[in-house]
Amino acid sequence: MLLYPIVAYFFITDRTARRASADFLRTVDRKRVRWRQVFRHLYTFAATLLDRVYMASGEFHRFEVAIEGLPLIEKALGEGRGCLLLGSHLGSFDLMMLARRAMDNRPVAVMMRVDPRAQVRRIAGIDDAAPDIIPLGRPESYLRAYERLKEGGIVALLADRTDGTASLPADFLGRATTMPVAPHVLAARSEAQVLFFLAYMRAQTATASNFPSLGRQPRATAEELHCSRWLTVFRFFLKGPPGGTR
Image (tube, rainbow, N blue to C red; front, side, top):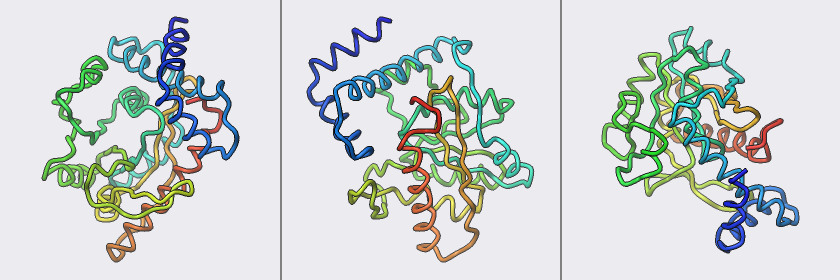
């Protein structure tokens, strides 16, 4: 209950957050945005941060994790193929820690940017030195991910952040933007099963959607096709996960 007055404070005082939220919702829904929708959007963001605190404190009983699409992962692993999970900043990436529990604790190598100054990460209990964390921004980052996939493992990373790296031009929600090329190079070269995943609130559900492997094709063709397919699935879930609230 305390979350409501906290969100209300930022809703009233933070004009930048209100405008950014309204702009996003208007772009996605193509409708007039009312203040209740903006408040709910900010509340959802705050609740997701609170979820991280619960996970850090070990209060996993608060979450009921269900994974949709788990047979897709099991099929890929059963064939001895690696499985590449491509996500986005939609939903809670940190819920992957709980998703592992629902997958019989199968090891999932998570690629993420490590920032020792990030206080929230330490509060959330994320150990950047853990063996299943592959730090981004290093020469060997994608090589380690490639090797893990070739060994038949699972690798998860976000595919919507460029960070100044090589990118592909893309049209997203009617706006020209760029998407990082590296995740799609990894997908094309590893020939692993590629799935789109996100974690959203419906009593916490992690979703994996089929993303057919393209096999060996000319490099540019494979990368562009992977990126195009990923964006298509991303747009679908951005409209609102079926039955989900965040």
